[in-house]
Image 1 (cartoon, one colour):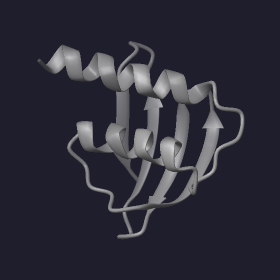
Image 2 (tube, helix red, strand yellow; image 1 turned 120 degrees about the horizontal axis):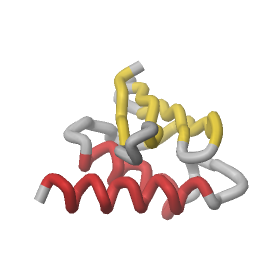
Image 3 (cartoon, helix red, strand yellow; image 1 turned 30 degrees about the horizontal axis):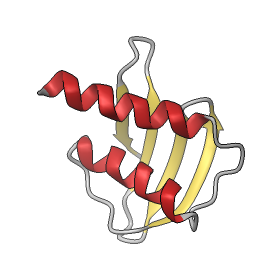
Image 4 (cartoon, helix red, strand yellow; image 1 turned 45 degrees about the vertical axis):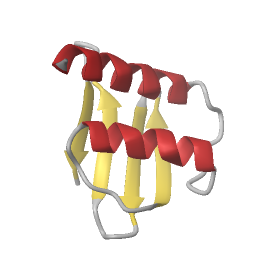
Length: 83
C-alpha cells in the first residue's frame, strides 16, 4: 500500500512538472498539489501561493499558514517538507 501511494504521488508531481505556468488559483493544479500534500500526511486547507522552483520542485503556502517544499528526490520519491 505504501509503495502505491508513493507511486501515485510521484506520478502527480511529475505530471505537474509539465505545466508551464503555475497559478494557485488554477483549480485542477491546486487539487493535485493538495492531494500530494495530503498523501504525505500534511494539512493544507487552501493554496494561496505556489512557486515553481524547477522540474518537480514547488514551494507552496496555505491559507492556514502552513508552508511546504514539494519535490522529487534522487530516488524518485515525493518529499513534502515543512518550511
